[in-house]
Structure formats: structure tokens, C-alpha cells
Amino acid sequence: MLRVNPDVVWVDGDDEVRLYHPGTGEFQTLNATAARIWRRLATGADIDDVVRDLAVEFEAQDEHDRRMIDRDVRQFVADLGELGMLGTGLAAEPGR
Image (cartoon, rainbow, N blue to C red):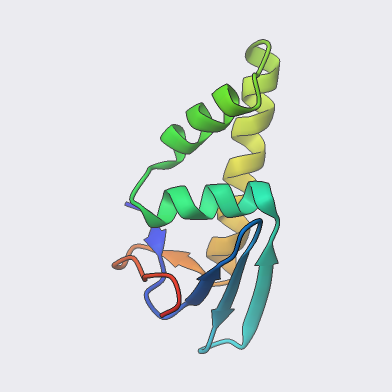
């Protein structure tokens, strides 16, 4: 299962999440939508659950809208995986 890399330090703000990977020096600030995805992954949700939740939240009107959300979420997750922010370890707690 995909998890937040336990080495990543992250701080949950009102409308954003800030990430720092001490091993790579990578720093990211996630906007409100990306922060929603991150929070769901951090609590153990899988990608399909995240996509389904966002489709409801953003009132996807049809299958095309749902496919776009699915594509965007999967690309975001892949990008964070390439940066070492996500992996298969234990989840880190905010502010760690």
C-alpha cells in the first residue's frame, strides 16, 4: 500500500501542506487540493478512494470528469513518488 515516506517531515496548515524530505533536500508546498490528496493518503486511503472522494467533492458530472480526476491524482502521486515523498513504509505524522 502506498504510504507517506516516514522520513518526510510535513506540516499541515489550513489550506496547504508543506513537505520536506531531509534525505534529498526536496521541499514542496501543496495547494488546497493537493493537500486533500496528501491527507487522505496519510490516513491510509488508497488512490481509488481518493479519486472517488474528489469526484464527489468536485461534483464530477460524468465519466469524462471522473477520468480527468483519476488521471490528475495518479500523476500527482507518481510525481511525489519520484521525489521520494511517497513509498511503501509506515505513515509519518504531521509535524514529525
